[in-house]
Length: 473
Image: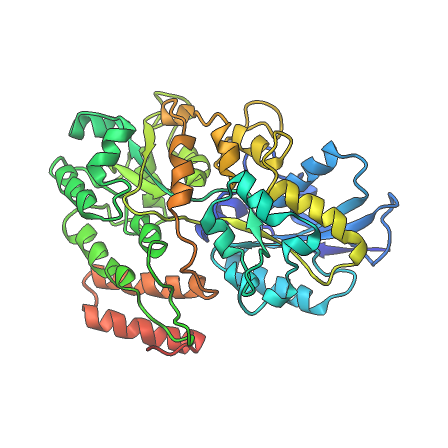
């Protein structure tokens, strides 16, 4: 009755999904066991050995499957088992497989499926949007719960379909702050207080002017303000006024994104960075304080702290590596980086709708102490002492304890709640993953002096046209 479906979850998939910008991968204990994480079982349209029918879940890490398992443990009368198919985003494997499964339909089609920020618009507004069931059709009181839970506007903007209805929402907040070294702040600026550092770098100003002044001051002390240009790119990308495509589907370059050419070159020529590339060894070395010169900080959301900085800081307690020597303050520019949105398949069996509604509502909109997000924010999903994370519901963070030893005891929610309100979700396209990579390659070549500005822009437009069939304005 059963057949095995190989899941392409690779060793280290959590880091891979972060690299792709999905943001946040597993906090402690949300992962499924090793068998579930490497293969999945699909019933041939019938009941399982337990007598329960199955809800098919598609994801690119084991994070959401792990969350749903916790729901089932807390609700033993839940009438379904979960069949998880997990396919890493490595080499673009996830989207084609998901699309094929949605198009094929039938008993094995996804009932719930996940999309990350790099390609979510394909499923909420783009080519595959027609498969999504609006949350209100699941029976969720969307408008009321969005308001009471204080879901960040950028997150709901991204998940809103062309008819103005919510098709997808997430559970994790990915609004960004500036994450800086306390010891360097004291040495260079005479204080490590977040409110003061925020003023020094122009936090909340909507401009880069003070940040570059701070970069000059730091450079005079032999310190880089960021590790590489990628640390600035996400703030630039997601604070632009328009996305890569105009209303006619032609390529356009927002002036704020075009300015990244000059930002990257200044970071290189003026010694304001260590010229690293994000997700490479030199970038991680800067987190330990072992780079070519000290790095003051990184731009990022809470997941960057929990799943990237902390594992790469060189220690596990204060006094080891850079552990405990970090703090967060306002970013000069509002932005978000990453995230995972959950969708329901409108073609699922009608008898599953109520159960799917319960799962999605519990993960994305429930702000009660019994909801996923409260447990996620307070690190209690698996008992006390787990990893705390910023969540989509501002109402949850407002009543939660966000103090982290890694941040010297600072409550990170004080800055991540406004960071989510500061972010903009209106400038994404379904092609961002591909176009961003092409853009950053050309910017890097320009900053390194391998191309002049005009050639970099010309080659960018030509490569987008060649690879994606998208013409320029």
